[in-house]
Amino acid sequence: MLEAPLLIVAPPGAHASRLAAILGQHRRAADLPELKLFMADTLGELGEISALSDGLTSQGLRRAVAALYCGGQTDAGVAAASVWLERRADWRGAWMLAELARQLAPKVLVSAETSVGWRPDFIDRLLDDLPDVRLLHLVEHPRRWCRDAVRALDGRLFIAPDYKDYAVNPPALDPQVAWFRVHANLAAAGAVLPNAQYHVLRVEDLLTRPEAALGALCEWLGWPAEPDTVQAMQQPERSPFATLGPDAALYGADEGFLVDPGFARRLRLPERLDGPLEWRDDGSGFAPEVLAIASRYGYG
Amino acid sequence: MAEFNGHLYAGTVNPFTGFELWKTRGGDTLPYQWTRVLTHGAWRGPFNEVIVSMCEFNGALIVGTGIINGGYHRAFKLGPAAAEVLRVWPDDSWELLVGHSRVTPDGLKVPLSGLSAGFDNLFNGYVWRMSTHGDYLYAGTFSWANSLPYLPNAKWPEDVLKLIRHWGVEHLTRNYGGFALWRTHDGVRWDCVTPNGFGNKYNWGVRNFASTPHGLFLATANPFGPRVAIKEDDDWKYVDNNRGGCEVFLGAPKVKPADA
Image (tube, each protein chain N blue to C red):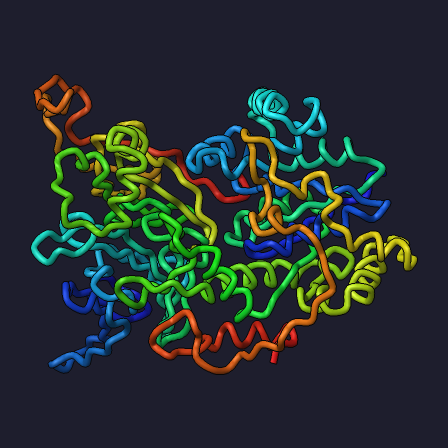
C-alpha cells in the first residue's frame, strides 16, 4: 500500500518549497516542484488557468512530468510533458497526484502547495478527492512574512488584489490580509483532521533548531531520524528541482527558493506583533484577527 | 429594498462615501425608527457605491453591490470596479463572501469564498439580481466586457489599463463578454453556472429570476440590435448580429447539493 502523499501547505513564499526539498532528501521521500493541481476540477481546466498566467502556474507540473515521464527537464522534455498532460485533460488533480505518487513509490511524494489555502473550495477538492493526504501547515511570523512579500512584490507590473487593503483608496499593499486569509482557511481545514494527517510547523523552529524540528517531523511521519539522516536533509539544494528549469518551464517553485535553495542554520531576530506596520504609511498595526491567529501559533 | 427577519431593509446610493444599509421594524407608529446597519459601502467606500440586489438566504440577508452605470460611474469618475457579495446577519454583523479584503472598523474582512470582486472578473460591475431556488442561492451579474470596444478609457485607473493592454480588447470581449451566473448552497462555496451569458456575449446582464415548480427561469438584458458596430483595421463598420435581444432560460427543477 502506498504511503499517502505529503503536501506542505502555506501562503506563497520560499520556505514551503525549501521544506519540500529538505524532506525530499530523506531516503523515504522524493520531492516534486509545486504542482498546483487543485485549483480546478481537471487538468484541462488547469491548463486554461495556466494559459491566463502565460503558463506560469503549470510550470511545476510540467517540470515534474518531464522529469518522470518525458526524458528529463529539458525544453524538449517539457514540450513532451505538455502533450502528455493535454492527452489527460479529463484527469482530476487527485488522479494526477496519485499517478505521480505511484511513479515515485516506494518513496513518498512530497510537494509544496501554496495555492489551495486561498479558497475553501480548493481545500475541499483536495480533501474530497484525496481523503488520506497529509498536510504539513507551515506558518511564519506575520511581520516577517509580510515584509518578504512586500519585497517580492516590489516593482511588479500587476499585484494581485489578494495582497491589498481595499478600505483605502487607492488600495494599499498590505499582505497581512493574505497571511490571515490563507492561514485561517488552512487552520479551519486542519481543525477537523486527525493529528496523523495534519501538523503545524513554524518556519522559525525549522531555521533556528533544524535538528529538533526535523526530528519531530520525522517522528510525526513515522520516518527514521538518525543524526546522519537529519543532517542529510539539511541540503535542499540537492533536489533535482532546486534550480531554475529549462526555458520552457523556468520556475515551478518560489523564485526566492530557486535562486537561493540552500539551507543554513541561522538565527532570526525576534519579531514583534505590536507596533506599526512598516509597509503602511498610516501607522496602523496588525488587525486583531491576525494577532489572534499569530498568538495561536505561539508568536508573541 | 428587502424584507428580512421582521424588518424592512433599504439600501442607498452614495458616490462620495459608498452605500448605506438601513433597517426598520415598521409598526403602527410613525415615523418608523430606522437603524443603520452598514455604512461607507461596507468600508470599501464609493467603489461599493450602491446596493443593487438583496435576497434572504439561510438565515441571513445577502447583499449584492455595484457602481451605477454598470461598474463605471462616468460623471463621478468612479471605477471601473467590480461588485461584491456581502452577508448580513440579524445582529447586524456582516461578512464578505465575494470581494476585496480590507481592514475595517468592523474587523478584518477577507472573502470567505476566496473569490475577489466580480467573482474574479473586473467586468462584473453589478451583482444585479439574486434568487433562491431549491437549496441554492443564485447570483447573476451585469458585465460590461462587451462594451469595452465602445468606451473611452483614457482616465481609467492604471492597473485596469495595464490589464486591458496586456490581454487586448478582442481577447477580453471574446472570453469575458456576457453576464456571469453563480450559485451556492452555503454562501462560501460557489459554482459558476455560466461565465459568458450562456454563450452569448451580448447578454450583458441577468435582469430577472423566477423560481417556479417548473424550474428557475432567468431573463437576460440584451440591448444589442440586429446590427452592431465592429472595428476592423481602425475602421468602424456595421455588421449583422443575430444574437441581440433578450433571452429567457429555464433551468432544471430543484436540485439538492447531494444530487448535483
